[in-house]
Image 1 (cartoon, rainbow, N blue to C red):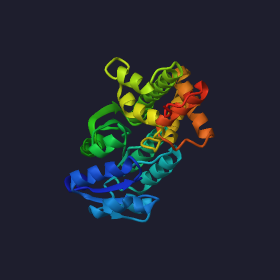
Image 2 (spheres, rainbow, N blue to C red):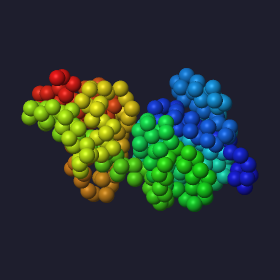
Image 3 (cartoon, helix red, strand yellow):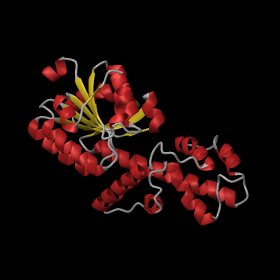
Image 4 (cartoon, rainbow, N blue to C red):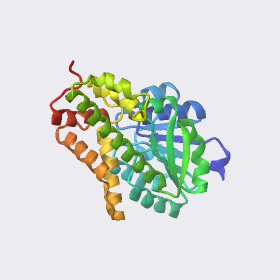
Length: 300
């Protein structure tokens, strides 16, 4: 098709902590025209400096794009944008959802797209803002062969590991599993460090002692220093992780199973939400355990 034979026109909607660095990688590595949109227009400034074109609405971006990338923080925003995308993209074009989205939303949008010949790839990512900047994210994607052929080169511009999980919605399901595991790591790390402090150990030294053993993990390396120093400026927000665990709970209910470890972390994150702390980094979850144990890791 004409879309496949010429250089693509790209669109990117959602230029937040993850979307902005991912858009930079795609823009610089593809050398293609990119139209962008974010509700906070200033978010696009650095992309515009490198040649992207800021438009005033999502619809404008979608109507002009051969490949449109979406990276938004809530199911409601993604659902609204994908509904628009499936109607506004031209036949043969492809939407790539980098968000963490409920599988139901992906399946419904994919069906609407099929009726018009519009492709959809669900391609949630893991690896945090550092991975987004460096282009080393893990990308777990779902979609058909034709959609994958269009989207794969761009997924490889943001990810060092790009794994096809199956048909539409499979990537979103895999991200649920990913964030269930990450959440349990966060909860265990918070509990262990707070317990170390309560028991009279130096939690920073406990962290150093554990780093070379089986307790070590990417989550520990990224989040233990933030927990120890109470640095909770968001790199990955609790609000987004809470949404992913809510997706896990909904999916578990559909399957008739329980998720006892994830449910505990989910309750902790709901408590953070009730305290107005849901926009902190995931590391902020340590405050729930600290409060229960009467300790503060940031105090000598």
